[in-house]
Image 1 (cartoon, rainbow, N blue to C red):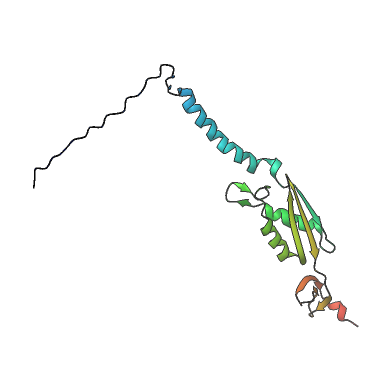
Image 2 (image 1 turned 60 degrees about the vertical axis):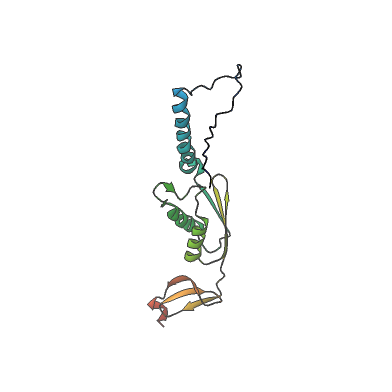
Length: 169
């Protein structure tokens, strides 16, 4: 076994050509270093603020179509009451972009006798609700109140209570 030879390789940077016409890069000015991020930060808060809190984007017009027995004013009051809450802590539920269409649909189906409902938003502030009411087939008397029932036997609406004078002869 022979002697071990170690060689050192020194890597030197490759020689570069000097371009006398190249402009030297300058440090950005202090104004530019602070102004551009400041403007970006202001825009990051201003644009969502404009979209989510400006009154232009609140759903102020709600059109209800297809009501026969249901009072549209009562339905509008129920929708307004539902939309009066806030989403999270900051956002209004009546905002066009945040309007909870499925939640409003579910609330209306639960509260009113509706067979079919369609909710459509139109920019910037119109919500159209088209519905088809369930048709009551029978009036049911259980001895204490009168109610409309549908073909499946579900109570659609309580009409009124039975008065004791109705049984007098």
